[in-house]
Structures are given as C-alpha cells and as structure tokens.
Length: 588
Image 1 (cartoon, rainbow, N blue to C red):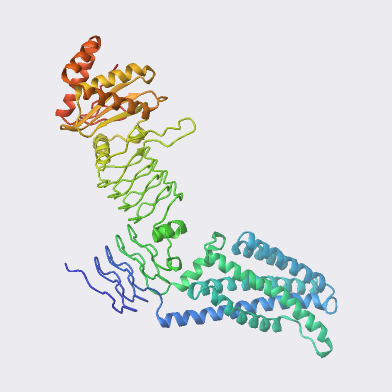
Image 2: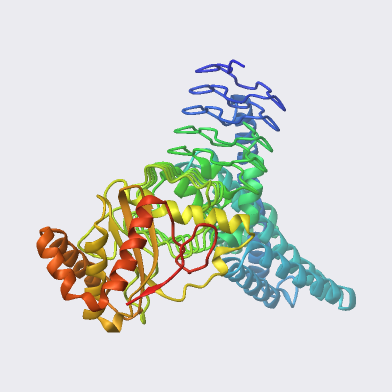
C-alpha cells in the first residue's frame, strides 16, 4: 500500500476522523483545526507540521478572554465597593456597618491566604461555609443584622468569583499570547474594576464628596490586590502548580479546540519540531512517539497520557535526562533515541518496549530497570550499573558500546560494585560486551521456558571472570589458576563455569570470597598466564614436573578448558543447572 503524501499541504479544518493513515507524510503541513480523532496514524510523519487553532477559532477565543477580563474586574470592583461602603459609611446608615465591614475585610484576607497556601477550591469551600453561616444569621437576626450579613456574603462570594475568573482569563492569555499580553490586558481589567466599583459603592451626593473619595480609595485597596491574586493564580496554574490544576485544566479545555488527535493511534509517529499549540492528545496511544524539539506541547491537552508529567514531557522533547532521577517511573512507551542519559537514575523504572537506540547511558543506574522488548541498539552502556535489570531475549542489544560495566550498585558495606572486566586496567573490546551478555540472554530464555523468574534467584557468591578473546592455552590457564589459588587462599577460588566459542573467546568463571580484590586477582592471573604461555616446551615440562603433586587437578582443569573449546557452553551466575549450563565447581 502506497503511503499518503500530504507534505506541506494546507489541511486546515480537514477531517480525517477514524481513517487509517499509517505511514502518511504530513511533514510541514498546516493542520490547524484538523480532526484526527480515533485515526490510525502509526509511523505517520508530522515533523515541522503546524497544529492549533484556525483564525476564526482564535478570534472567538480572544473575544471570550476579553469578556472574562472585563467580568473579573467588574466582580472585584463590585465586591470592593460593597466592603468600602460599609467601612466608609460607618454608623451613618446602619449601626452595624463599620463592624460588618471589618469582618468582611478580614474574611477576604482569610480567603486570599487560603488561596495562596492551598487552592482556589479550598477558598471556594470556605466561602460556601461562611455563606451558610451568614444565611442562618440572616434567618434569625434583626432586619439590620440580616441586611449586613447579606452584604458580607455578597461581597465575599463576588470577590472569590472575581479571583477565579481572573485566574482563568490569565491562564488563557498565557496560553494564547504569552506573558506580555497579560501586562497589556491589565488596563482593561482596571477599567472594569472602576465600573464595578460604581455599582458597589453606596450612593452619595455632592455633599459627601469626601466619603466618595474615601470609598474609591478603599475599593482600589481591596480590588487591585485581589486582581493580582487572580493573576498570580492563573500564572501558577499555567506553570503546572498542582494547587491550581482545575484552572489549568479548564483553560486547556477552552483553548484546545483546534487540532485534535483524541484517542488516535500515534505509535512510532514523528512530531519532530512540530508546533503543537492548542492541540488535543487526550487518550491517544503514544507508544514510541517522537517529540524531539516539538514546540508548545505544554499548551496541549494531555490527560491520560505520559505527557501529563512535566519532567517526562521535557525529557522526550529535549532528550536530555543527564543526571536526572526517574526512579520507579513508568517510562514504558517513550522514544529516547539518541538521548543523553548519562548518569541518569532509572532504578526500578519500566522502560519495556521503549526506544533507546543510540542513547548514551554511560554510568546510568539500571538497577531493577525493566527493559523487556526495549531497543538498545548501538546504545552506550559504559559504566552502567545493571544489578537485577530486567532484560529478555527480545531486548535488542546489537552494537552496544561498553568499555566496562558494574554488576552491583556500590553500598557502604560493599564499595566494590563488581566491575566487569574484573581487572580495572582492562576494558571490553568492541565485540566483548556482546559475548559477555550472550550467555546471560541464553540463560534467561531457559528461565522463561521453565517459568522461573530470575529476579527471585538471589546471588550467593561473587564471581571473577577471566576472558581470553584470542584463544587459550589450557595448560597455562590451569597452572595460572592453581598458582593464584595458592597465593590467595583467603579468596577460596572455585571454578564454576567455562564458556567457549570455538578456539577463540574463552571465558573461565570462578567463584571467590566477597571480601577479596577481584581486580588484583584478575591482574595476577593474566600476568601468571602470560609468563607460562611464553615458556618453551622444555621449560614447561620442567614446570609441570615441579608441580607433580598437583598434576591430577591441573590435568582435570585442562580437560575442562579443552571441552569448552570444542563444545560451546554458558554459565549461570547463581549456579543453577539449566540445560547446557555448567555449574560443576572445581576447587583448588
């Protein structure tokens, strides 16, 4: 089937709802207002595409935002006017007016503090509680007190409503036009405060000019801080402060009436450098979707996707997670191809099915990280910690770059994290890591066939691996191991496994005590091996004659090495005997 080509096309307002558009090319297209809801967009290319609102939608949203600005200012001005009239009038119209104004002002202060410290929802709940109390008072009190209680409740409710509308309008302005537009809209809000104040301040005549001026000053003193509170709340909501998540969610619902990908399948789709402002991705399937350098993704509707998390969203956009912490997070469907993940902590994280191709995972903490069916092709794992990591036979590890790796995380009681190769002066050659990991993968396949979870098998001993990538001399290896064991009886060296792939790439694995320096043992072994291998045949016979008492054990180990050369074997670090696994120990 030939893929559809919409490259650089004008698709504004077009509907592709429910269509199968797999592999379609939308690169550079104008998809503002387009409908891709429930569409199948597997491997679709949206790089450099422009999503968002159409012009008529943007105009309608601007009109709504301006209306909300005017309404918020009017409500705040009206609330401030009521309180100021009570304070300024004193006892002239009602003997309880002054006290009532003070109580109303104090109530506004309490509600404002609750809004700052908790949320708008909490302040709304407080307002409702105060309104209920005021209603009860009004029902049983004298007419003068009842009227005052009603005015107090009206001022408080109107003020809270004004703050909420101000927050919503501010969040919308941030969404549509940015912070500069907030400053430009401020004069409109102030003018609407003046209009609201005219309705809120009690009527005065020309003989009460001083009273009118005082009321205006009090109104401004009340309304302007409340306007600033609404503006701050809207700003905090837009910057994903969880206390104001409701305002952010509502502003996004209003603003994301443009391009929609709701419930679409975007597996392996590419949004590189796409503009995604005012776009709806709710419930979309975003497995391995590429967001590299996409713009305005924070201004899209992202409910029920991994993009809701700001840290994960920034990670997939920048592909820079260096030294960051994503422990125990669900990163299962992410596309982190070419990502910089040096020194990242992924302890217990789930990266199954994720794309980590060409990623730099140098010194990454991959302890208990789940990487089932993940793609690590050509990734760099140098210095990574892979204790109890979850890999499977379908984890793609082709071409992995790795100079050395750690099998454990260091602890205060065990500062040596079990480096491989054991000799700290050595590194894996380009092909060594693949040879190192291959038997482990084979063992995992055997575990899978026997329904065994390898994470439940606790390693009892530490291991020491002697790699011979260019072939091995069985006699020299046997004598070198025997000498190493004699020189370090505290190491309790036991050969537990041999792996061979023909005449080359032979590995001897030994079990050693956990307190010994494995790097030193490895260096001594290869020094001894090199000296013995370099001996002439007569000198070697003389050496063998000198160790006749131990000849039987040396010959036995020679036979084991020769067997490994002739028949491929692999090892299991936990010494479980499965399939062809060699778990027989050979002690010195």
